[in-house]
Image (cartoon, rainbow, N blue to C red; front, side):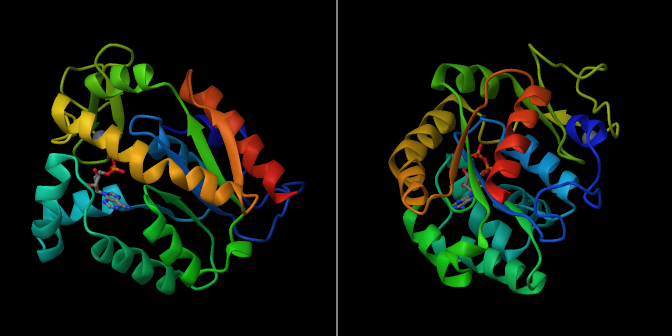
Length: 236
Ligand code: ADP
Ligand code: ZN
């Protein structure tokens, strides 16, 4: 899971636009657009934390914390977790990070969350909002076949990219399984919520001149190159 980062120089390399200033990026896109994969690569490339609210909630569910118990019913149904819980997590995270950079994945997901984020950070503190653009037909195919390592989070697709040993992670040997919210019904609801609540953020951020739309069809390595070019362009 290191494609782009192994092919390109690390964060300390000279010649990187804006080198020295930590990158601050939001990754937007439909379920299955590849936000998690691309956000992880950006995080590695720039040496800044990858903040995934979905991963944070899944970890809370696994640990059985009070937050996890609250979040689980919403998540399994494919609904959004209430804003106050989500915003609380992000606020805690960003206040701990001080002035450092980040790659936000899965947040914000509606205008109320975006507004809360602007209250935490001035908009000029964001470099770019990368909008991963992919057709609904393609994401339905990706999500139906998606399998995720329960230990390290590596993702597979039973059709396009199966693990070498069925049900076992190539990276860490962990159990590879379907996400509880990758059922047909929950997928349909999540995509509807994306259209009604999250897609409007593209315009919201476009008005601030921050949106870079990237074609997210095709192999992860190719998409990663486009994403990197978009972020570098925005930092110039
Ligand atoms: P996906 O983008 O495929 O839905 P994520 O891993 O980003 O997957 O999120 C999984 C679930 O976690 C969401 O369906 C939702 O229930 C919850 N969640 C994650 N981020 C947020 C958020 N910013 N606001 C509300 N709920 C969230
Ligand atoms: Zn694994």
